[in-house]
Amino acid sequence: RLRVTLDGSELALPPLQALVALNIPSWGAGVDLWSMGSEDDVGEQSISDGKLEIVGISSSFHIARLQCGLAKPYRFAQASKVKIEMEGSCAMQVDGEPWMQGP
Image (cartoon, rainbow, N blue to C red; front, side, top):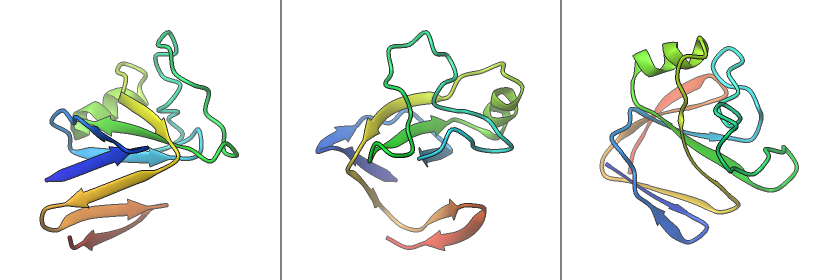
């Protein structure tokens, strides 16, 4: 349903229920998705670097496990250009405000 391009490269997405673009180190009641599992070789997150951190979440159960520190998100990349193309409508949310977005 989604085609995501990050800095000109198409992202191969696993099965997900949510794709999250972050610019701050806090999401969903304070979870820092980007720095979870910091043993991976990922760039440091900064609100002033001109990049978004792109992560994925597989299910509502995955969210609960993230909030307890029992799971890690799918960390895809940091990107300064993010393009999201959809086939059909898709639920969106920005800063807690939800809506249905058409293609």
